[in-house]
Amino acid sequence: MGKAKELAIEQELDLVEISPKAKPPVCKIIDYKKFLYEQKKREKTLKSKATKVTIKEIRFGPQTDEHDYEFKKKHAVKFLQDGAKLKAFVFFKGRSIIFKEQGQILLLKLAQELEEYGKVEQLPRLEGKRMIMFIAPKKVK
Image 1: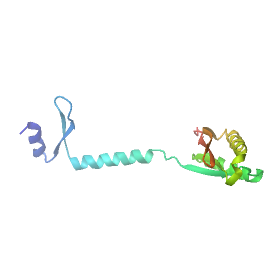
Image 2: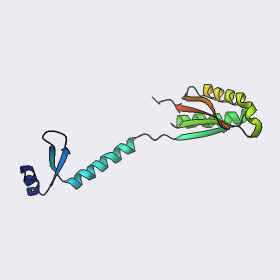
Image 3: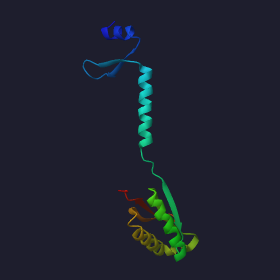
């Protein structure tokens, strides 16, 4: 039995191998349960400090009128100021897909008007019956 193992038994602690690939292998005499507890605690605090990205959606029709547009833009500004990502999309129902240029113009107009609050992460792109655009909030100084 090695000297390290004897010391661990003597102190009623555990002999834990820290890096087995090192020559000679690095070991530590510690209370293993306490070590695991502190490691979990450390991971938990790191996880709580990690930023959570929320995505808010705003839906338009290809022929959204000015009042509805302004109303939804006001919500978009609030979402970006709160630090959420914005997913703006135009939903084309039935044959309204023929107005895809109008949808793109609407989304680009929105992006231009929200320039001071966020930057475009993905330009308008057609996916099935939706034209989607993502806007990320600008960092608050």
